[in-house]
Amino acid sequence: MKSLTIQVRLTAWYFLSLSVIVALLAGGSWFAMKASMYHSIDRDLRYRVESVVPFIESHSLNTQEQFSKVFAGSSDSSIVGVFVQVTDEHSSILYESDLLLAHRVPVLPPGQSNGLVSITTVGTRGWPVRVASKRLTVGSTSLTVHIVEPLRDLMESLREYGLYLTLLIPIALLLTTTAGYWISRRALAPVEQIRNQADSIDPADLAARLRVPPTQDELAKLAQTLNAMLARIEAAFRSIERFTADASHELRAPLALILTAGEVSLRRERTKEELAEVLRKIVREARHMSNLVENLLDLARGDARRRHTELVPVDLAGMLRDLCAELTPSAAAKGLSLAANLTDDEVRVMGEATELRRLFLILADNAIKYTEAGSILLSLTSNSRHVNVTVSDTGIGIEEAALPHVFDRFWRADKVRSRTEGGAGLGLSLASQIIQRHGGTISVLSDFGHGSSFTVQLPAIAVSQISS
Image (cartoon, rainbow, N blue to C red):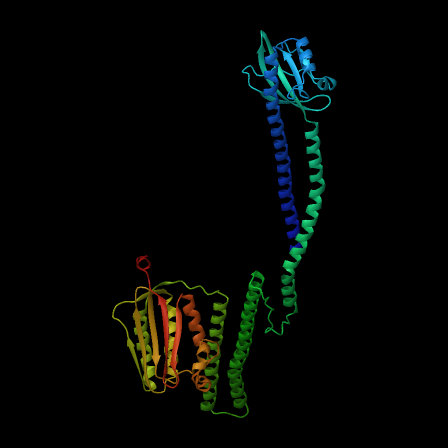
């Protein structure tokens, strides 16, 4: 069943469910028809009993001769044509209609002693009969009057009805199953079209999209979902292409410098000072490559979700205070003022101290790099739900069109300056990954030419987490 197509499986389930439903309806209708016919016969038998019993009582019939004489000569319409068997208390037949005698209907059992009419079905050698019996006393003789109704016509009608059902139900199932197969084929045709379109997409042309049906049904939503997935795949593929190209470029530059420095130094004899200068260049570029590779590995681990971050309570206020003291000499060397607007109290969040320090070091270091004159401010605010840390500067700022790409890998606000500073454009990408692992957010506001402001928002620590 699993190897069959959805269309065949739908048709098979449709056929099976319809067969069960039709069989239940057919069986129920047959039994309902039978019960209705029996109810009609029983009602007629009771009516005949209530006609025959008074007739017997009015003529005081209690012997075989009296019954034969009176019944044979009666012209009463309620008596003529009625199939009657009368037995005494010893189950001896006092009177029996000729038709019953011809079909050898057996001696019927006595009726109920309470005088009520009892109705039973009795099988005979010819055909079954329905019998209504009532016991009465005429003179000193106890009699039982049996009114008999043949069931031959009823059985024939039920047999014919069952035959019609047997013949018509398969035909109806065949027609409805064929219609169901056609309907399922029509319903699944758009799915087949979507599959064909998906097969026809060239791996080299990820910009292709599936045609969305004009209807607003599940298939249209499926096509839209697949198109959204293709868009994400295309974006990821383009990102990988850019990442690979940028990484190759970033690694090629220091390698070229190292190779050039080595080749130039080997062309002729160099003094000790000249060789030391060449080695310093080689070490500087090698350190740049080492940092670049380490950052790339960190980003790759983050992408693969392989980096485990164990969160513990961390005092952000103390961390930022120490970081500000550490970076003050670097800022002062460029003629910048580095200030911190922090509370004296502890402000704790759940995090990994090393990663959070790296996060704020990246933001503060970028602020120093891209600020020629002015000031840099680290500020911290908190409430019951969030802790916000903002790093603001008065540097070169970021163009509005470039803001969506700030956290892209290898993106730099000033490519020439960042290369001289040793940056590769991976810092903000790492910062974004770190903040995601901590369940926070990072945003940027910038006025081009006048400075930028990066805000990190982290979940505030709960009281229960502090106590634990």
